Structure formats: structure tokens, C-alpha cells
Amino acid sequence: MKRSGPGSPDRARRRAPAGTRLVGFGVLAGLVAAWELASRAGWLAPFYFPAPTRLAGTAWELAVDGFPQGIRIGSHVGITLWRIAQGYVLAAALAVPLGLVIGWLPALDRLVLPLVTFARSVATLSLLPLAIAWFGVGELSKVLLIAYGCFWVMLSNVVAGVQYIDPMLVRAARTLETGSLGIFLRVVLPAALPRMFAGMRIALGVGFMVIVGVEMVGTIQGLGALIIEARTYFRSDVSLVGMLAIGLFGFAASTGLARLERALLPWHRGLESVRR
Amino acid sequence: MTARARDLTLSVAGAVGVLALWETVARSGTVSPAVFPPPTVALAAAVRRIPATELGEHVSASLLRVLGGFASGAGLGILLGVSLGWYRRLAALVRPVIELTRPIPPLAWIPMAIVWFGLGEPSKVFVIFLGAFFPVFTNAYRGMTGVDPLLLRAAQTMGLGGARLLFRVALPAALPDLATGIRVGWGLAFGVLIAAELIAADRGMGFMIMRAREFGDIAVIVFGILLIGATNLATDYAIGGLIRRRLRRWHPA
Image 1 (spheres, rainbow over the protein chains, first blue to last red):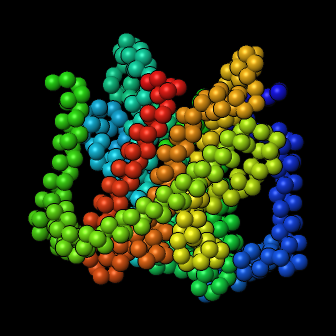
Image 2 (image 1 turned 30 degrees about the horizontal axis):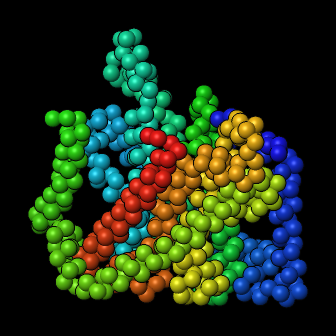
Image 3 (image 1 turned 135 degrees about the vertical axis):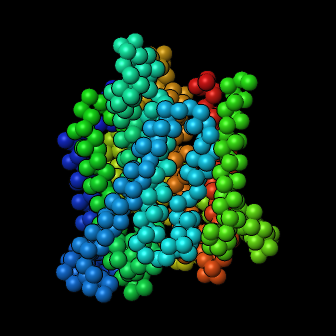
């Protein structure tokens, strides 16, 4: 048995060969065609599995007429992305400085460890009833919940990024008589950046996950609301188009962040294997 | 004092400190205790308002759901991840479909899950299944494709092939990645569980706190959040311990 074994560390980045990708597209096109044909032949009930052409029509309807109450899909997408962006930036603004300090001071890390461990275990969406009771069903609750979900993932990765720096690097810098602040800015921070970016990527996924749950309660704006609102009108086609839209934008955002990482940290091959 | 004892003391001090701070601030009277109850009050209120049998029902309903969804999701994830990682030609056929559906957040499937499976248990279990499946599959596949080819070739030189090569060499080598997938998958499955219970359920811990909100009973909500966090922490710890014991056979710490 012959195996083409990719064993290099950057295997995850390696692109699939053109042939494989062609097969992939072929399979997908075949599936969509089979789905369409099965729908036309009446084998698939339209309510359970709306045909691809029907979904395309729905997408057009959402883009032009809007749903529900004339809210176009463009504005659903815009609102969802804006909510995620606010929560994400808020979380990053708090997590990065705090994580750097906690990572740099081992005693502080021990002190807050139980709190961080527990807060991470609290399911973000379990805070939804409390957030609604405290801040109402408006924007603030949504943004704060996204920030909560993103914050702990970012924090633990920033802390880990600082803690797992090769101590030789720091000692080498000391022998060169660099000051503490100099070491921190010129040695610790750059060495911690790859892990911090890994945390940022995972947090983005968390944001896209939390937003759907948050938007399913008490709003008719945003992709999560679109997906769940469609149920009351028995429009499974609208739900499916909404799902595809959030999947597409989630994928685009994480790809964009990965590109940004490669542009900002060209010296690093990326921590593809780091997962939460 | 040894370093370990000092670490432990600091951790305990941190936990006690946070609880004490919370208790003091909540009792100081700046915010009404009905809006921001101290931990002791939340606990007392929950004990008074939710009978132990009902609480037990909520917890067991949640655990049954999450176990069902996780077991099926992780099981299929491992099966597909390992077999696609082993038979690459098959992967070229199946992976595009998985990679296309992966970016869709599990919670976004809730309405379609209800359309396909109705309002009962199966729709919730399906959404939890999705939450567990994708991370487990991704990590299992990554682990299998990342097995050092030298290991495989060495084993082949010694006459190992087929199923024995898979089960005795490749699978053990991919085990750390499988373990990562299982932990991440459990965390996601648990998060999805609570969300699904908030949105569409008539029992379970998520339902319990959503109902408490309708009554404006913040003490019960706070208690429920802490209970959910503690359950997640305890189960994650148990799974982590199980995995570590299993892994030690191949990867001595």
C-alpha cells in the first residue's frame, strides 16, 4: 500500500491538489442536481427539503422584498455582523491587556485561575435570561453576551501565549541588558502573538455561534431572527437561506482573519493545530 | 511552603475572595437584592422555590439530552474522521459536503431540526449531535492525516498491514488529536444544549432559568447559571480524567 504522507508541520496549510478540488466540486454539483431532480419528481416534500431552484428564488425574494416585514437580507446581515463586531472588539479590548498582565505575573494567574476556569464553563447563552432581566431585550444584552463568550477564549489564549514563551528568549534579552518594559514589548509580546491570534480565531467562531442563539429571542432583525421567525410562517426555505448566509459570512470572516494573521505575522507559520 | 501548596492557597484565596466580594457588594444595599442577589440568598431562594425532585428532573433531562447527542455526534465524528483519514480517495468524495455544512452554527439548525424531527426530544438531540460532530470529526481527520509517515513505513517494513496497521499504529498515533476533539466537542455540545433548552423545551436546566425569567425570579436564574457552570465543569473534568488515563498507555507523561 502506497501512501502519500504529508508529515511536514505546515501540512494544514497545504492546499488540496487541483484534482481533489475538482472531484469536490463535482460531488457538490452532483448532489445539488440530484436534490433538484428528486424534488421535481416529487420524491422530496417541498416543505421538508425545498429544491435548490426554490432556494435561489427565496434568496432573491429576501434580497429584494425582504422578510419578515420587508427587512431585506442585506440589513439582517449588516445587523448581525455589527453586533458581533461590537462584542468582539469589546472582548479583545479587555482580554488582551488583562491577559498580558495575568500571563506575566504567575501569582496573579494562580489567584484568578478558579474564577477563569469557572467563568469559562458557564455556558454563554445560559446568561441570556439574566442579561434580559438586567439590560432588557435590546442591543446591549446581545453585545454583552457575545463579548462574554469571546472574552474568556481570548483571555486564556493570551495568558497561555505569554506563559509558554521560551524562557531562554527572556534570559537572552536580560543578558543584553534590556529593561523590563523593553523585554516585554520587544520579546514577550511578539513571541505571544501567534497564540493570541489563535485565540482570536476561535473567539470569532464563538461569536458567530452565540449570535444565533441571542438573536432567536426578542428581535426580528438579524440572521438568527430571520432563521427562527421563518418558522412561524412555515417558510423552511427562508430558514435554509438564512443558514447558508450565516455559514457563508462566518466562513468569510474566519478566512479573512487567517489572511490578516499571515500578513501581520509573516515570520510565523501559524498555529494551525491550536484548538481550544 | 512548597510551590504547590502556595499555588493551592492562592487559588482557594481567589475563589473565596470573589465570592466574598460578591456577597458584600450585593449586601451593601447599593443595588436591590431582587436585581442582584448575593450568592447565599440565591441558593436559599432556589432551595425554597424548586423542590429537589423537580430540580433532579431538570438536571437529568439535560444530561440525558446532551449524552445522547454527544455520544452519537462524537461516535460518527470518530468513525468518519478515522475512515476518511485512512482512505483518502473516499475523503475527496465526502469531505466537501462536511466542509460546506461546517461553518453553519449548530443553533441555526434549530428550526430545520423541528421541521424534520418535530418538537420533541429528537430535534434537540440532533442539534447537540451537530455541535459534537464537527469538532470531533475535524480533529480525528487532522490526527489521522498527520500521523508520521515514517511510523507507518517502519511498521510496514515489519510486515504490518491493513487493519492491524490502522488499529495498532495509526490510530494510537492519532489519539491525542482525537482527545482534543472530544473535549472541544463536549464543550460545544453542552453550550448547544442550554441554548436549545432556552429556545424550545419544556424541561431541562435551560428551560428552568428561562421560566424563572418570566416570573422575574433573578435568584433562581443566578442559581441556575451557577448550576449549569458547575455541571459543565464537573463533566468536562471527568471526561478529561478518563482521556488522560487512557492516553497514558501510549504517551507516558
